[in-house]
Amino acid sequence: MISRATAFAETGSSSALRWRMAFLVSAAIAISYLDRQTLPWAIKAIQADIPFSNQIKAGLDSAFLITYGLMYLGGGVLLDRLGTRRGFLVIMIFWSLACASHGLAGGVLMLAASRLLLGMGEGGGFPAATRAVTEWFAVSDRATAMGIINAGTAVGAVVAPPLITLVLAQTGWLGLAPWRWVFFLTGALGLLWTLWWWRAYQTPAPSGATAGTGGPPSAPLTLAHLLQHRETWAIVGAKFLSDGAWYFYLFWLPKYLFDTFQLDLKTAGGIGWIPYAAAGVGCLAGGGFSSWLLKRGRSVNAARKLALGASAALMPWVMFAPQLHSLAGVIFLFSLAFFGQQSWSTLVMILPTDLIAPGAVGRLAGLVGLGGALGGVLLGQGVGWLRDHGYSYTPALVVSGSLHLAAFLLICLVIPKIQPLNLATNPMIQP
Image 1 (cartoon, rainbow, N blue to C red):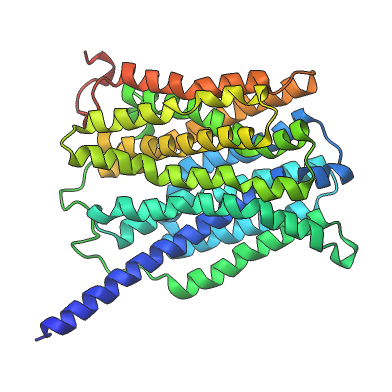
Image 2 (image 1 turned 90 degrees about the vertical axis):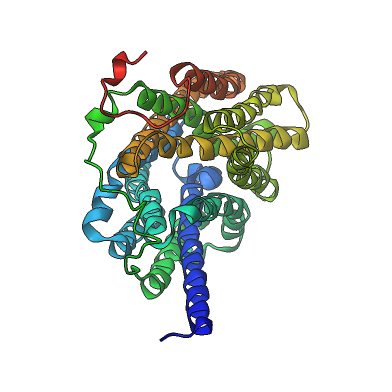
């Protein structure tokens, strides 16, 4: 018989191991956000060797987002076939090599091919993270674990500006332009992570804590079935609108600072991390506020919508950025927008778990992610066209500052009450 002390020690060890797995996956997500920020922050150096227009810049962003969105939807299939350990290994190797390949580019076409490949690899990151959480954590701990993992997005984005600035200032080895080393070194960082992953990650044996909800397995739902529900369209539409704004901020903020304030790279890199740090706080704040409301006795419907509404209310202030001539004021407004966006994003990605059974959450979350990527493509292309035709950033900021309010209105109108769907009924004719 195992003594109580021994059982307690084994339980504590197992718990510590689970949280180490969460931080391991969070590190991968941080690397993914570092990799996707390489082009926006190194763009001035790249354009000195490979000139291209704002519309081409938008096209490069779209190349990433299109394959990212498609792989977000299909990444779960790959993970199901290979398993989490082998699947995430393959995904990280693929996207790290894709990131490094930017450094070999001799023209725009090679840059575009590298962006397509990077999006294809990184699109599998969050499906792999979700699968790891499901394997290692009981239902009661999964939200906390996913919060730790999602915080990796902020870590990677915060590290990117100063790190990329440092590489651009200190490299140039072997006669290669410093911007090429940005991609080589960040790609190498991902490959180093794979050694850590392969050594540390093991698939745990199924147990009552991590095997799911304990109910009978539900019949698989197809994408076509999910798309028959207006609630699906509401969440996908809301993500399409709000992520259009997010990807504009994410991919265009460095260029906005360069163009508007004529900043040198060192100055931009020294302050450019601040909005991304605010985004990290927003990741934790949105879900925390909603959970606090639930503990205070609010319904799921009220807790989610109050938190979503508060997040959306922070977004329109960015419209006033063009009226400010203070760099500190502009950074504050973008920080407010980044905070609100990531608070919003955390909540929107929780909604699928409120509406449908676990067996279909992955498919619905994939649809939501695809909708967000397509929104980023549309607004990004619009911004590139406006800039190349002599327009300021004002129209783009006015539109992006309005999108979260429109998304919140869409959710409230189409989903009057957030509650589990009755998937056995004909959804489109429900009152």
